Each structure stands twice: as structure tokens, then as C-alpha cells.
Image (cartoon, one colour):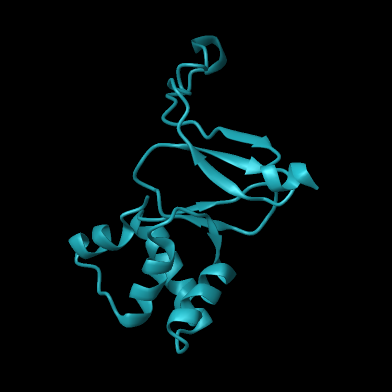
Length: 138
């Protein structure tokens, strides 16, 4: 569960009605929404919110480090409000659903020194792929 709205308030982020509704759409039940999905949910709550405001707000949240952009397999960018807790992603190869996963162990430890080629490795992006239950049932 994300605590995005609380984090933004603690930072003193200017919370207009439009910005608040975008943050609220991303907060709570953790999902990875596209910008268009955020727009649809935001306008359902606040009809006067514009596409430009949603896109600008998403850009600001990414720049602040409060939301992460997730792109997989050339699909539309999705926005992940769980930017503060280290995690990996599980992606459905059928429908593109993305879920956060927290595997045991350190993914950096899985890369032996002989494969680092002198790099000072600071992070690893691991993506697990498979079919979600709905796509398997098709």
C-alpha cells in the first residue's frame, strides 16, 4: 500500500484540488496505471481536471522521486507510487498487468565480480515475466 498523499503533504507539496486527485488516484490500492488510466480515474472524481494537468502532475511526481515510471516490453509507461520501497516487478506477458514483488536476497549479490567489468554497480532492475491467472484461463 502506498502512502503517496502523506509523503507529499510532509514535503509541503502544493496540493491543489487537481494535483490532490491525481495523487489520490495513485495512492491506496497499489496498481501501476498508465497516464490515460490516471486521467480517466481523476476525471471521474473531479471532471474539470485536464489531460495536461494529469500529465504535468505525473511528471512532477516522477521528478520528485515520489512516483516511478515503469516501462516494459514497449508498452505505455505506467506509474508506480511505491517508489520508496525496493521491489521488483512481475509482468503478465499477455495483458501487461504489473505487480510488485519482494523476492528474498539481494539481486546485486547475484552478479559475480567477474561479470561487473570494473563497474561500481549501484542497482539492479529485475523483471519477472509470466501469465496472470486471467490470461492463463483464456
